[in-house]
Length: 311
Image (cartoon, rainbow, N blue to C red; front, side):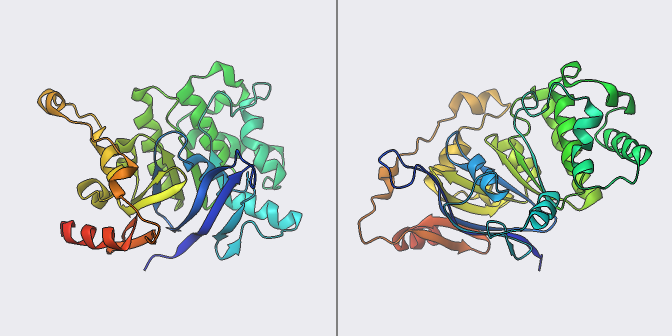
């Protein structure tokens, strides 16, 4: 069985807790990520998926719950050296390739920032060699090291962001909508690059996105979020071929296909929470309907989902 790299247990991220305007951005979610896999996290804007990623990497302090990375509690008390080591093992690729790079720094210094902080280079020559190697790894040229971010396209800037994340030799990378700001023609290039790097370096990804077709392409398993809750989690093919939660079905019904006949007759499935008809006695939790296929539901819905599951 695959080894767990990350365990998220009952994670909560509330903004303005205890106040009238409290927002439950991440509301009591649990899931695991295994070494070498890509877990896709999808949902509409504002559902809490990016907040989940930022809380995992400790950009936000969790309101409650645990994030265990190699068995170590990310949000537990840590010394400076422990935090430094954690930051090296877990990196992030940000959504906006224009805002995530310092416009006043040359590409070589942007990529080498982590190398400098963690003392990975033995001297200036080794530092520059590492930068050149990383640029070539992500499909750029070593001549690009002396340029500034404004001299690059969006796709090239995202490659620089990937090189920066790789510079400290991490085990786990959170990719927070890394292709949403890019042209469609460039998106596939970046995703293919990430897959190649995963094979070469044994990386593990949390791939956050709202483009379901791209998530299916890159992910081993997919989690679906709705208003801070994880409502379905399943292997990629199972989720697409056998969606159980009505919200997942709604998301999938919105995916366009390059088929005029299909598009002419396609009917978008609207999701309305009233479909569940919950009562005060219903206990809602993630339940395993089929091996590896979990749905957030009541006991009554669980029986219904099991009955309709296509084996």
